[in-house]
Image (cartoon, rainbow, N blue to C red; front, side, top):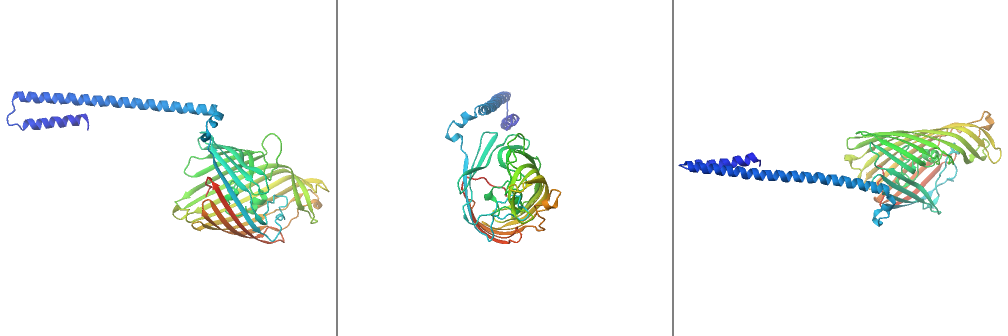
Length: 463
């Protein structure tokens, strides 16, 4: 209640009381005036006291905010100046999330998986494993380093022995304005599937185009910069400079960058049930003495060749997702596809063990896949994927006799059907059947059984 309201109420009460008196004398009126004056003084004093207390409280609050801001600034300065001391301050000062992924497969194949895809003998051939195969286990460690950076390392534990570094990078979290930088060893941001780890794949294996053009996926040692536009629509632009260690490049000891990547993605939601994303990417690298074994020549012999030159790959990718009522825990549909086209030009040394002839070389190859995954009820999913490759026609030298890569007039294809069941978010069991026609004259029916188990805290993957 305000000062005027309180005073008015008091005056009205006194006047009501005084005027109800049947005979009010002058002394009575004087007494009423004195009471009113006393009430006014009393209320004014109380209001003045309250105003003083309010001003003091506001001053104290401002001082506290100033002290807190100064303290936070001091903490950031100390953390930046002495990161090693902060990390040794106690066991709880560094508390990373640690997880272990255990996976394995059983593969039944009619043909030798070591036989390369027709027309892509000079590309990577990761192949499959027959029989029981424990596969690589994946140990992941991640944590915030300080207010500005976080780190992550993923180690691949080979069942035959040995440990390899799959990822080991530092990522910024305080650049602002939508910028984010990552440096170290990482999976490239090109395409849609490339950044996903093997345990997050929707099928047992990668599409043929990833297996042949990227040796399943492109890993880099370098720096990546991304920019996320401050808009309602998802717009992401990024670039990378790397060592060029991953296929189709070759690891070289020299200054400067051996590879570069540019990519852009745009996407949005349509209501609460639909979402989409499309992207483009460009990868450039240079190979130096890249050796390819078991390459068939025109005489159907298998030789070893060496290639040095430029490699450029352009790609398109898209994904569309639908979840009834926006609830993807029960049911969802995901449709995705990618297309890559690679052009290589340089020098080819044919049959390095015998003929050792070097001449010009050029080829353009491409491939794509289209797949759909449907979660038709909680914990159960099924998926269908179709792969197709175009080996192109290689040109080697000016003399037709040196055309060691034949024009096969054959386009490798593969169709895969999978069904998986996830008892919980930490485990998955999968059955996959594939009809493989990627090698001319060697059709194959392939059956895979896979398990994927997660131990410990593991971050969510993109849907």
